[in-house]
Amino acid sequence: MLGFDPIYFVFLAPALALSLWASFRTKSAFNKYSKVRVSTGLTGAQAAQRLLDAAGITDVQVVPHKGTLSDHYNPITKTLALSEPVYGVPSVAAVGVACHEAGHAIQHAVAYKPLWLRSLLVPTANIGSSIGYLVMVFGLILGSMNMFLVGVVLFSCVLLFQLVTLPVEFDASARAKQLAVSNGIVLAQEREGMDRVLNAAALTYVAAAVSTLLTLLYFLFRAGLLGGRRD
Image 1 (cartoon, one colour):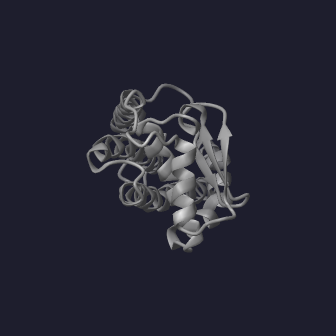
Image 2 (image 1 turned 135 degrees about the vertical axis):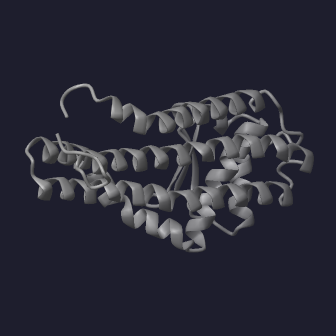
């Protein structure tokens, strides 16, 4: 387990390819539509605020955040943080990302159950991502099946979190696409650019879940639980 294992790359190659493709598509779409100005002239921050106002949400603050594609909604502090290329930029890409994050705030306001479940899973997912992998590795090295299975359970929490994240992200994007048009933020013909940006971003979450799943299957294979042989 400490040396080079080509089987590991056989398992993870599809996930790596998907991750690289998703990252390329996301950056490419965002860069392309960052250069396309929305006809309304609304910035990302203004677009997000309009959706919040339309939904009757008055306790969420839209704030600037450093970085690129670091946009997020924090349900604990009720802040909608928009990155520098989004917050004050009146582009199709910026508005799309901002409306997506506003979609999360709307989910929170209407008690969207998958969002509640994802928030509930955050602590266990953090533990699993921190030590789950290492516990599986040391379980195999030490020949301790009990330790290995503990690692599997911890690492599976990460996978569960990522699987629950998928409907949360897809729903936020669906809300953004619909509400951006119905609230006059973008014209119907500008939605194509929004769709491409948000669909590409959603693919990154799929890639993350696939990577975690294949990693877990690899370790189960190495442990002899999926037809493999323990070394």
